[in-house]
Image 1 (cartoon, chains in turn green, orange):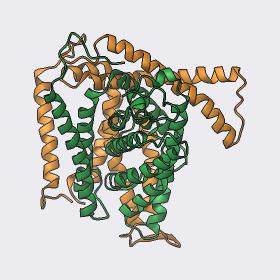
Image 2 (cartoon, each protein chain N blue to C red):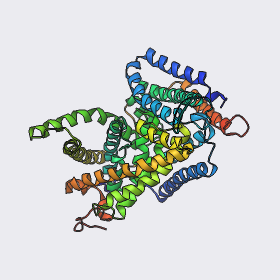
Image 3 (cartoon, chains in turn cyan, green):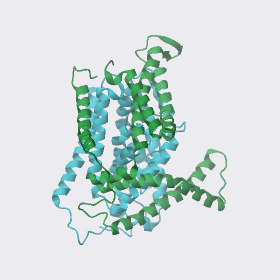
Length: 272
Length: 230
C-alpha cells in the first residue's frame, strides 16, 4: 500500500531514535504514575479533580498518552491512519449508546481493538489514546481514561500477534485477561478524579462494595474486575466476528495481518 | 478539603459562568442537553457510591442493613458533583464554541503533525454521516426481509445484521481514502502549507504562554507539600 516516496528524502535514523525515546517516555509516564498511586495509596476520601493524587493521575496518564500518540502516529502507514477515524467513530457511537443503558459494561473499545488486530499493538495504543482525547470533546469525563484505553489497544495488538485470534474461542480469553489488566489500571483514575464511576450501573456495584466496608479504591477496583473482563471478552469476540467477515481485499491492506499470521486460514499469503 | 480548588462557591461560579458564556454565544441549546446527558448518570453514580455508604458519616438519616444514608455522604456526593459539573461544563463550552476547520488549520500551522489534524477532522465529519449510513443499511436489510422482533436474542441478531455491514463498508471506504491520501503525499515528510489562515493577534500570542505557565504554577502549588495540597 504505502511505497517509499521516490522524490522526497526518507526520514533518517535520528528521527526513528527520537520516536523510540518518546514511546519509552510515554510508557514510563503511565507506569510510573500507576506505581506511585498504588504504592502511596493516597487517603480514601480524596479532594476531587483539584487534589494532589487526582492531579498526578490526570497529568501523568495524560502526558503518557500524548507522548505515545506523538511517537506512534507519524510511523503509521496511510491505510492505518485512514482507518483510525472509523475506529474512533465506532468507539464513540457504541460507547455512548451502551453507556446510557443500565448495563454495567462500556463497549467503548471495539474500534480500538479492531485497529490493534489489523495493524498491531503500536497502532492500537495510539488509537486508544486518540479515542479518549477526541471523544472528550463531546464527553469530557472520558479524558482521564486515555492511558487505560491505550493499554487496552496495546494488549489487544499483542494478543493478535501471538495468535489469539486464530482460534475463535481464544479471543474472549485474551479479552478477559486484557480486561483484568485494563480495569486495574483505570480504577485509580475513577477513584481519585471522579470519586466514583460515570455510569449508574457501575456506580451501584461500587456502592454495594463500599457498603460492605471496602475503601473507595478497593471498591472501584473490584467493580472494574467485575465489569472490565466481561466487557473486553465481549469486545474481542465482536472484533473477531468483524475481522473474519472482512473481505480478503480489505484485509490485504494490512501487512501486520500477513506478517504475524493473525487470522486462521491466511497461511497461503504469508509474506516476510 | 478547604482549599480554593475544592470550594463549593468557586465551582458553582465557574459552572454558572460557563453556562452564561454559552448562552451569550448561542451554543447553550446544544451544550445543555449534552451536559445533562453526561452529568445525570454521573450524579446518580456519585449518590449511589457516597450517599448510601460513607465511612466518615456520623449523622445517619436512614439505615437498611449495611446501607447507611448519612448527611456527610450526601454533602460529599453533592460537592463532588458540583466540582465535576464545573469541569465538564468548561470543557464542553470549549468544544461547542470552537470552529473545527479553524482548529484543524491552527493545529497544522503550529507544527502538530497533519496526521492528528486529519484524524480529528475526519472523525468529526464521519460522526454525523454514520446515522444516515445506519439508516440506509437498516432499510436495505428490511428490504431483504429483516424484521426486528422483541426479545434479546432476536434484537442481537438484528443488531449483528446491521453492524457487520456498517463496519465492513466503513473499512472499505477507509481503504479507498487511504489510496487517495497516499497519492496526494500524505505520508511524505517535510513542511506543509495551509490553505486556511487563522488570524492570531499579538494579545493572543502573549496570553497563551501566560495561561500555560499559570496552569503549571497552579499544579505545582497544589503538589507542593504544606502549601494546601492534599
